[in-house]
Every structure is written in C-alpha cells, then in structure tokens.
Image 1: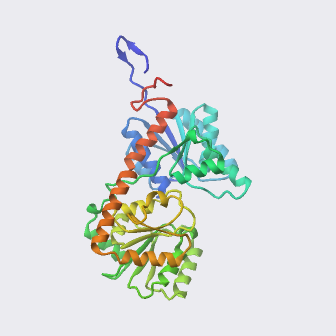
Image 2: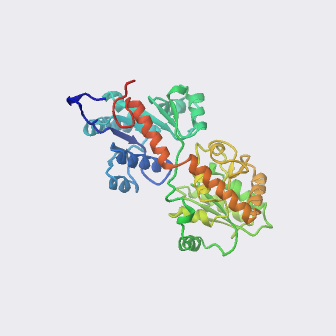
Length: 399
C-alpha cells in the first residue's frame, strides 16, 4: 500500500491509465471489445485512452469520458509505423500512460517502439491466427507475442501463440470475448423490430429462415452454404447472407453467379449489414457459421445462442469452445456441403418443445461463460497483474 501522509492516513492510489491501440473503430469484434474495456476502465475509476484511425465508435468512447487520439494506425507502411511510434511517445507522456495494450499487428509494432522508448508496460491481445506461411509474415506477426502478458481470446488462440510463436504459457492469459446480454436478450426484442428487419429483407411470411451473418470474405463459407441449400431443394426455406461487402464486389458477384447457377434465385438472397442483429437473430430459424478456416473465437455463434437460436458451426477453432454439440447447437466438418445440409434439415425438423429446450440450454451456456462484464473484469485483472496492484488499485505486497 502507498505510504501515508500522516498517522493512519493512506494516500489514495493515483488513477492508472491504459492506452489501447487498434487500426480503426468501425463495427467488429476487436473494435467492440476495445470500447467495452475502455468503458469498464472508466467505470472502475481508471483512465482510458484509445488510439486508432477513427470510426463510428469514437463517439461512444468519448461519451463515456474516454480519450480518443486519431493516428494512422491502420497503415502497415514501415515508415508510417515508425512515425506512429514517435507520436505515441508524445501521447504516453501527455496522458501519463501506464500500460500500452495493442490489439493488432501494425499498431503493436508502433506501440512496442513507444513503450520501449518510455519504459512503459506493453501487452497484447491475440485476436486471430493471421497468415504465417513464410518467415517474413511470421516475423511481422510475432510482435503479438512480445507483450509482458499476451491475452488470448480462446484456448485455440492460446495454443496457436505457443505453438507458432513460442509464447511462454506463463505469459498467456485466456480471456474469452463476451457480449452484452442487455442487448442480446430475446425478451427485449419487440415484434415491431422483427417486422422492420423482415421488411428490409423482403422475406415471405411463414417461411423458415436460414441465416449466415458475417463479412463477405471467402473463408466465411458462403459457397459451402449455397451448395448445402442446393441439396435441400425439397425444403421450403429462405437463406439470407447478411453482412458488409467491404470492397469485395468481385466475391459478391461470384456468389450471385453461383446462386443463379444452382437455380437458387429467390431462395438465397444477400442483405447488407443489419443494425439490429438481435432482431435478425430472432427472425432466423437456424444460424449457420460455415467458416472454412478456424475462427479465433467466433462472435456469431455466441450471439445466436444468447438469442436462443439453433446454431450450426464448423468443427474447428473457437466454435469448439462456444458450441456444445447436441446440447446448444451442432458442429459439422469444414467444407462439407452434404454434412451441412443434413444438419440444417435436422435443425429445421426440431419440434417446438425441442427447439425451446435447446434455446434454454444455449442461453444458460453463454450467460455462464461469455458475459461482457466478465470479459472486462478479467482484462482489468490482467492490467492489475502487469502493474503489480490489487483490484482496489493499491500496490500488492508481492510487488
């Protein structure tokens, strides 16, 4: 504990400051987690600073009293990274930063340079596996393993950090991502909200909906799902692919051609990013996550289970840690349209009682394991560990 200024009077610990670094603050798992932790820091009496190239989530940060600094941290240019490092030195000094917490590779290189120059603590969060097929890529990625503590968002990522980058297990802390159950609560979704989403999608009434939410990236498995739907030609259903194309018009055009070639026009449709995902989940009869590459964690299966929806995910990566096969959803082999089609048919054939029982199990499962407040508390505990302080912000005896 800090020394007292007088007999029996302890000096309150000074507020601690964490600087989080990421490329941008658009909507996404990394971005959402950064904002959630910043808000939790403010609520706990810490100071929160975030540096990024900006985005729509900046306003939410600033409303909560966190500081946002705009830097081109989305650039991978080596010269820009070095310039960012120098500017981060100024930011660290200006806001008296204690910990630099990097959540992506290019920002991590800049943050590591700045932390080393100022003698501040440096830690990272491993949010993905990243391609690592050659020496240059592995060296670039390896910065994510240089933190005093390396947060892994799943056991899968923890094992990857150890196996590929040699991160010592004693430096790894597993903190699964969490979601806000005030938002992802079936009881909070009104019929009006569901009607609005259904109207935007122009789906017919009473037809089962199979939904794949996610960016239009090739590894997300859209093609596998389209092929699976083609195998269900006798089924009355609509498949909705929901997500932003993000300058992937070429891939979107490929999918449109595949849909037409399979004779699925009208049965498979594409919808832009949905601003009301809880209502979208409630519309879906089945939520499918057919990723062909392992998800580092996979937010969609957790959100869908929180809304009591049957989930079908690929049997690898983070899905093995978030979906309980046969209890809260189903897992299928990657890249197997036949297996995926059979699983979709099984999910659609659930009786009302079976569907409700599965929903109750799914909700209980995610609420027990993937709560946003728990994620934030565990992240702040890692910060305290790095600083050698206890939960109240006082220096620990061990430190």
